[in-house]
Length: 420
Image (cartoon, rainbow, N blue to C red; front, side):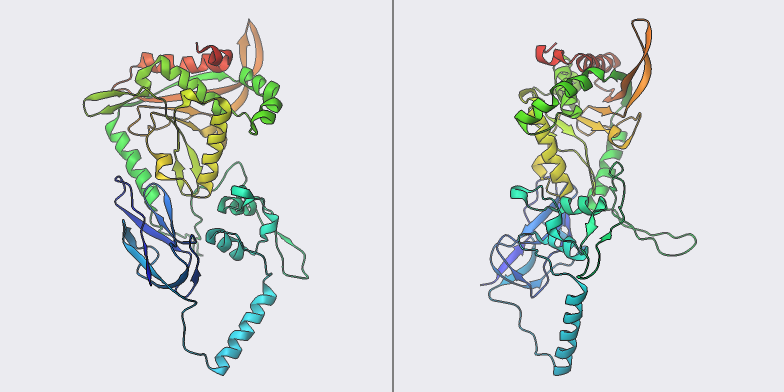
């Protein structure tokens, strides 16, 4: 009995999506759980999986088409591959020759156990999955693993009898490519018009809305990171041995921001019409760069989490962002956000609010600079920090004191234990 492939049910805030890609074509065998298509909404990319074994008989939508919730995308039928007319002897001979040539030109690699998206990248890139370290469940190779492998200039599997060739790195690890690659046409002054993805268009819309709505102001300060760096150096090995994850700066900033939010509740509030909504919980968004744009997954109840749990949650979000696995639940809500431009070398910036939140903290690059301590000029690892806030409900006094509170905590991390 034929089974319809339907668009997943969207959340209330998502009205439609775009069919991003088909991973199967009519006539292909399909197993239950296989990813057959991907749909891009203005928030996340959703995978559409097969609900039964069979053969993809037909598709009702093409790549690039707009789709609605629960709309039919295609039909899976029973049995094996679709029967087509028998080829002529000449056509059969040509097809066999072409197949033989393809086998000789391309190494046969084991792609069993790989998702369709990963299998496609491995096949098109002529890669050997055995050479790629998997970070997924049970060591499975993810799409992010393949992209990281190729971006890092790893050796690509070569045809039998030839030496492996070294693939040119797409971009240095410190400056990842966040926008889709664009192949400009040849010519003296080439141009190419590319439509925005749904996610990019939504980001643009939200950023413009917040500029038109909020009275955004930014205050700055600087933090001597030496105490935090000394703390990491002293306890890093023991921390990794116990928790299986490294102690980074982001978890320290999350905890410091949480303690500061307790002292200044208005920073953790939002505007709803003519009301101010004060939140009695601490859900902090962490800006993560992905190939499709900046996303902000939410760390929930940070006042109830230790540094190790925060580090693990951040690492999980980063991996999900790379592989396109973030869910609407991961991105929903949030009472405050943190963004780290220092990852890309930024010295100073004015981060923009993530509505309906009223404030966002910006971290930046750590550079040794001369400062005065006890009348002596010394070199210290310093970081500029910025707090952008909605001046409609947050006064300059609260914003400045909030940033000072974070500075004091990070320059004396014992304050986090004492909650002072």
